[in-house]
Amino acid sequence: MEKSNYKFEPLPGYEHFEATTQIVIAEILRRKLDFEIIDAENNLISVQYNNKEYIIHEGTISDANSLIAFWISNDKWMTRQFLQRKGISHAKGILLEPGYQTDVLDAVPLPVVVKPADTDHGIAVSTNIQSREEQTSAIDHAFKFTKKVIVEKFCPGQEYRFLVIDYVVRAIAWREPANVTGDGESSIQQLVDEKNMGRGTDYTHPLLKINIDEEVIRHLNALSMTPETILKNGEKVYLRKNSNLSTGGDSIDVTDEIPDFYKNVAVEAAKSAGLKIAGIDIIIKDTKVTASPDNYIVVELNAPAMLSMHNYPYIGKNRHVEKYVLDSILNSK
Image (tube, rainbow, N blue to C red):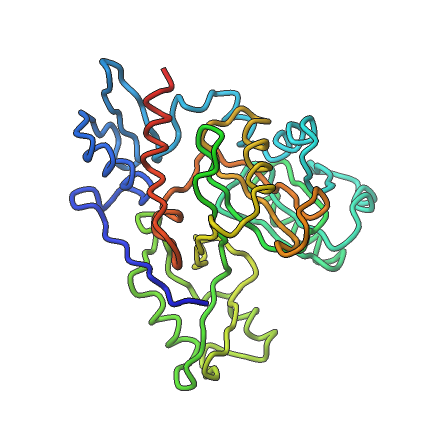
């Protein structure tokens, strides 16, 4: 894989905003539009255009998406129903509430994914669960964050984020789990420290630092490694299973590589809920085989669409998606 070209410079004067909001503010400044910071801590701003006021939260939450569309996307179980109505492939699953009968778990054969119905950033999501004991533990953990838990069939493959704006795919990113590649001299800890340079500890940066926590230690132990292990030159090691950028994952721009079939799927998924600005997560089993409904599932729809992963990927082009987002917002009234 090519070398990283990641280089993010915070917007002067607006460094404390989330990176996605910084990107949108930069576009507002480029257009010389009047705007107001309403609540910096909550990334809430307003912009004036053609004698109208537009409220923007976290860079993408605005009148461009209706309240009902936002509500649908915010509930993963509700999302499934709208995908099903349009014949869009998604994983078979069940919805659990506290006090569920354990025999209902037989409806979804292992391996499975367990996730809260209404959280984001990968919170309490457990994937590729292979045993009933592990499944029960993951469900108990998920219930700490929600009152409804989804158990669904695990689908192997790679997960991609499609950014759909006004029903056009403007960018696609593959989020690779936190990883390091050896040089024959440095320990895993040293490689992590080097890779963390230029990354942030929160969403004010597009990429976040890798934190060697208990989960990483367990993952390394399963590979008979520790943070002190020295990797061979070119040896690549993944530090955790999930690919969230919040846990140190890498965003790889693949916009020009994904077949149009899946871009059309992303557009139809956005349309199913009426989302004009959306991040569509799709797992593709194998991008090299002929595209078909059996080769993908739509995982979820995201109305708060993170833009920074597309403008500042770890590897790949800056897609300058903020101009399309702002156009969509300013044309929403």
